[in-house]
Each structure stands twice: as C-alpha cells, then as structure tokens.
Length: 442
Image (cartoon, rainbow, N blue to C red; front, top):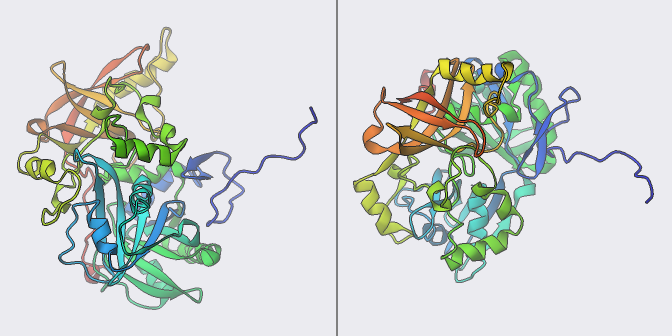
C-alpha cells in the first residue's frame, strides 16, 4: 500500500471566513464549523447583552414557483394561508397521517406564486412529495446558491441599520425586505430564534464572504460575537424552539406506512443518522413511535388552520381541543447536577457524562412523576446566563404547571442511572423579546 501524501481537508463551512484560532470543529448538516470562537460562555451572553452573527447557510433550501405552489405546501401542512402577504414568512409544520411532525421550516412568499422554503429534513420531505408529481409548479433546489446568516441581540438593529443606511424599525415581525449590502440585494427577514430582536439575512453565495466580513468589521463597535456550534442551540432551549432530531424524532419511521418507507429509501444513508434508536440516553424507548411528537405537543398548535385537508388533519383537530401533552421547560436540581459531576472525581462507576453547555447530538430522557413516566425531556443544556441546567420537556398536560416537581432519568442503558429532581418552568424559559416594538428601541 502506498503511503498517503498530504493532509485531509476539512469541509469547512463555505459561506464564512476561516478563523485560524479554533481547534475543535463539529458537523452542521454537511459542513464543519468551529465549536467556539471566543468561548461558549462569552458567546452565549451575546444575544442578551450585545449581538452575534451565526451561519445557517447549510440549511436545505428550495424555490417553488407556479400556479399550484401554495396548494402544494398546504397539502403537506396545516398552516393558515388566508392572510399571507408577499414578503411575509411563516413557520410551517409538515405532518404525517398520524399528525406527527415530519419537519418544521420557514416559508417565505416572494411573489403571488413564488416561495422560498428553508429548513432541514422537512425540505427533503417536500422534495420527495413534489417529485411524486401532480402539481403545476417548478421546484428548484438552491441550498448552495444562497447564504443564510443570523444577526441577533439587543444591538443587532443599530448594527444593521448602520450598514444599510436605512431604518429597519418599520419591518414587522416575520416580514422581509431587500436592502443593498456590498452592492447586492440582501433579503432581511425579521425573526428571532434567540428570543431577542433578530434578523436573518439571505443573499447570493458569491458575495457571502464579503458580506460576512463587512458585518464582522462593523460589528466591532456593537460588541458582535461569532457564534460557534456549541452555543447555537443554547438559545433554542432558552427560547423554546424544538429542533428536529434533537427534540423530536421526525415522523418517518413507521414501518407500516409505505409513504414513510419510501421517503427513507429516498434519503438513503441519511435515514440511519437521524434514527433515534442509534443513540440517546435514558429515553431509549422500545417503540420508535414514542419519540415522535405532534405540533400541539411541541407548542405549535396555534399555527394550525383546519380550512383545508392535510395529513393528520382530523387527529390534530381533536388534539387541539383536548391536548394530552404540552411542552414546558424543566429546571434541574443544581444539587443533583453537582452530584453527577462529582461522580467523575470519586471511586466507582461514574454517571453518564454531562457535556457543557450541551451535547452536540440529541439526548432523549424519560421524565417521571412518582415513578411513572409522564413525559420526554430533551436538549439538556447549561445556561450560563441563568446559571442553571435546563431542558425542554413534552409532559402530561395536567402536570404542565410551573413549580410541579418531577424527575429526569439520567443515564444510558447498562450504566448507572440517577433520578435528577427537576421543576416545571414556563416555555420559553427566557423572556421572549422577539416582537419588541422596534420604534421604541433606541
């Protein structure tokens, strides 16, 4: 065998400049990004005190245009299209015939018959369903054609206004508009995945590095931080944004459903990577269907509209009227968390490792009340801002009352387990400031 020459190249995130200082990287979709730039504690404070820039360019994207474009998306989702203006974005949730979430994503109406869809697995589900035919529209995958940056936090408004030379204060929540940046039109969508004032910027990939560096340079005066992969999903937990695979198993693993099995074949090896039976902690349940959640359980019931047929429509209509489980935050006992950490420094078997601020992959954990399973906890993370270990939890509706005491079963099959005391808290855990009236921001 001939010796290997040269070093393997890391498939670094394409749309952002390489920083030579980080030494740890992690996979995001198809590329690798630094785990942290300054350190994860500093970065996790950015959206509370100043602002950050984060790269979500690897998210899957498609453009759909044609007379049947809106009808196609409504055939997959129960979102409300009665009031859907051009330049408006909607959070759309695709469901299977049992009303379980396949994926959630953002849909922007660019013109009367043109839409841009951005997300994860749900975008691939849309492609799979569209390729089955029957819709008068043209689908164009454009993942690598568009960058997607988020700039969020208290100083993000002033930073971006200084760059475009115009006021963004009149841009309503979940509305978008093009502004010129570095000589090209860039789409500014006002959203707030961090639970704070925030914007998502999208533009041509050919200009991505120039625009990113321009924001980075101007951001020095506004306390801007680059957001590494370790910290990205901390704000998802603080702001209660359930994430596919991390917080819910996509509804595609029902072996009795030919459509789901066809989609798994469409995905190929990707399907094995997102199968919750291939990882996790104490939540290794016997039935994979127990990992799946409905939009109602994940806090998205208010987005459902029943004026058209979509998968799981009747099941979800009944669930909205009488929810069995709903989402909450859990605040973990500091004393019990410290005991887990102490086990690494004393003789005997140590508990399953608690990575800080959170594990990159999913952690699915059984939640108990008086020894009975009452919910599934996910996305355990340490909030440096609150100095608490917290998680999201889909729990029996009658127990979703702040102050209710439960236990989270921490451990892996075959290893030592610990029942960690936890208290039900509101979701989102951090005060939601996404819809702050921008005209009042100075």
